[in-house]
Image 1 (cartoon, rainbow, N blue to C red):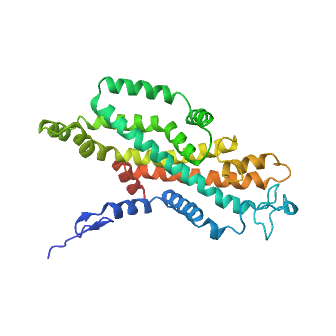
Image 2 (cartoon, rainbow, N blue to C red; image 1 turned 120 degrees about the vertical axis):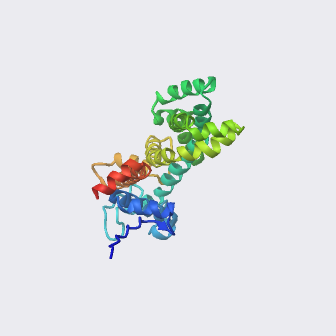
Length: 302
């Protein structure tokens, strides 16, 4: 009798076909840093969504008699110079960080990806003009561009979303343009063009799906930068304005009394660092997940 060795079924295979979502979850499960990053991000999202039920106090209520209380059983992270509960303010500060971080990158994608697709696919005078403008904008740090626009347009959450989004548009233009220039030379694009397909159809049906991987990775990494930019602008007094809590203005308030009440600056600083680290960890794992060569190497290593 001939012994037949069964070939193990890859994770995420259903009826002989790979389920993309199950495959992605299976790959992420092999990466511990991805799991940690996802758990931290989901935790911050949960805190932001249910902030009114989690926070023990109203974040704007003042009590001068309880000013600068050290951490205790009532005020878990102490209070600020106005007697406001720092733990409650940190919880509510999660909201502007996540909202501005995610929506601003959505603005960057909606503006930068179409421009990058058109420039990379056409490769004519439009591409040269876009490349020239992108190089000029990338020569300035995104925070500096955001600071300049906030100075001109004013502060506020809507303005910050727009400003931080615009400052990151050149990143997505250059990324999408580079990927599109590679994909446009593939045989299936040439075949589609020979059958009379219009440029918009080719870019939407053939080029965009093949450049989504780098865009997804860059989105996760850029969200971390957007959260950092929002905190930096709020720290400088150009972002979220008091009494609305933001991690940036909480750190700024804590710096003024750093020797008297160090917890005021340390606690929100740790929250900001943890959120940025989580998105960076997720972005690195997504990059490995979307690169088949890295996936194979990772599986062999495990």
